[in-house]
Image 1 (cartoon, rainbow, N blue to C red):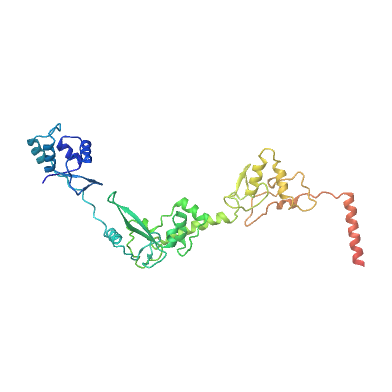
Image 2 (image 1 turned 180 degrees about the vertical axis):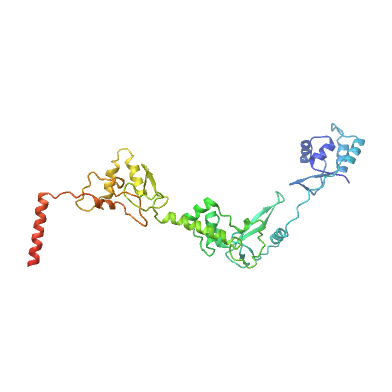
Length: 356
């Protein structure tokens, strides 16, 4: 029995447009199609038999361009029924996933994040599902299972932190992890592997065993290096201290530049404030910040900046300078007459107290 798969083939045989045939079928006045649909490519197509199309033509003699009996026979001899597209050979592991989805049975499977085994009776296990097929022939099937802590690692930074410390509960993430992931990426999830399957029971693997040890070591070193840059003060790459306060060490990301010299984060803020309208000059702001550190009786007007001092030079090996320490090199202000008399009186009282 000759069959026509799809409305286009049937409409061509009837001598009408596919849209016209679709309207007839929708209204219930067209030829009856078979109950079963045929999958062609990615779409399900309706099937019409030649006998049903001939019956409908005979009952509708007013159809324009209708084929004669001889034309129908000729058309039937030349028309071949297209065969449905052959589905690709399915992976037996995928078939097992479908079988388990239908049966509802929970088995030991591989965690989609770390790759280690998720036990059947793990009360914290997270089960995910996915849709297969197209509507209205779609259904939900069981997909990857995850350890509870692995289900929390949804981002690259969390995944990297968990890979470096599989026993972390909960996942601990620092800015260093986030920076490393943003710079080099971290494709560490087990489900991202080409031949990974959720039905794989793990076979005794350890968490993240699928990641090469050398790659983990490289990522760990990158995170530690970034952590030091974020938390440990270091000298400026030029070797010069801050040109305003003389500080020698600052966080790597906090160093700034002003008039060709490095400046620390605090002094960078001073410079920005000094450049704003209605704010005092930079030297006045610097004095306000340093006045509590200046020894008594030091001459501070005008107050010099670190780069203006003769001692301003590149750092030596292992040398470390605190901010504003150079103020000890400032000249002393001479004593007034009253101050000298008060100093002599204090010395005399001290001597009398010792003699008594």
